[in-house]
Length: 339
Ligand SMILES: NC(=O)c1ccc[n+]([C@@H]2O[C@H](COP(=O)([O-])OP(=O)(O)OC[C@H]3O[C@@H](n4cnc5c(N)ncnc54)[C@H](OP(=O)(O)O)[C@@H]3O)[C@@H](O)[C@H]2O)c1
Image 1 (spheres, rainbow, N blue to C red):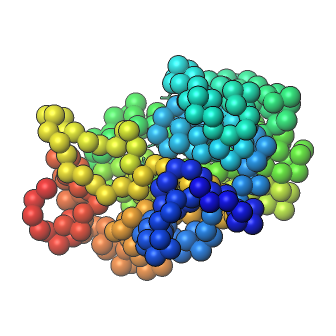
Image 2 (spheres, protein in one colour):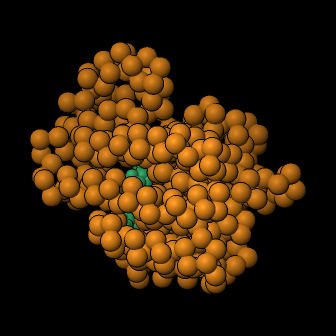
């Protein structure tokens, strides 16, 4: 592990972005294909942004949230970890302690069970508990990471229960939590919301219309909130990842066959990039391999061409998803071999 880089941190995960011995060229190649140009230019995580700060992570019982918790512990943060599944949160806490991650040990991790679909009154109680932890230190960062499951189907095939659950967990819950916590942050004169949105919050996501709607809603809400409160010390970093490799990433078909492997950024690398973006105060960051990153640029800067492209591949993408094929393949555009 490298040290002494002017306050910037090296994490010991060996993923190539931070803290392993990859050559300079390989690092740049990896960076170039995994994030937008602004994030690419920022380099490493600033340790001082997180050291001894209280960071509340929702959805920390698995996936990217779990990895974020471990990396933040290593950076010296005090953690509040939330999700519905308490035994899984206990497991994450124990691993942080067993692996000796960070300087605070078991005392540095508080478990705070939370169901984001439980309504404002229940969330108010959880927020009150959160600000009373660590001797009433309050919360410096919230990472809005939890999300409802996201199977792929056409907009017509989404049952009302799934529609409601997606909007409750992905939109209503995070907004309630934010509304309830924000006055406490304003009293302290600072606070930072890191919002795990998605590429599906920037571009059409055929097969994931409701998930996409929930992420567009988050982007609109949190960019607006920042513009209202930025001058009062409130920061928002909206992160838009493309496909990320987690334990939940699709692997097998319903018939038990191995599915076609999609090229996904590892959850370790995604988490590192999230922390780079937040510690450098970026307002928005994109994390993905190609071709998703290129499509994001296209839709952002040449929307007519981007929407034309998405309309061309949308139907095929839904069919490919049903067959558990590669839904990010260039073959969706050019035909090519069946997947
Ligand atoms: N993975 C990707 O490819 C990808 C791509 C783009 C964006 N993202 C975004 O990145 C974030 C993390 O993704 P992930 O793949 O790591 O997710 P994941 O593995 O599906 O984990 C979701 C987390 O949310 C929690 N959760 C679900 N329902 C909840 C509820 N009602 N209340 C509180 N917590 C709840 C889950 O814990 P419990 O079940 O214990 O509650 C779990 O910890 C999400 O916002 C996702 O939209 C992911």
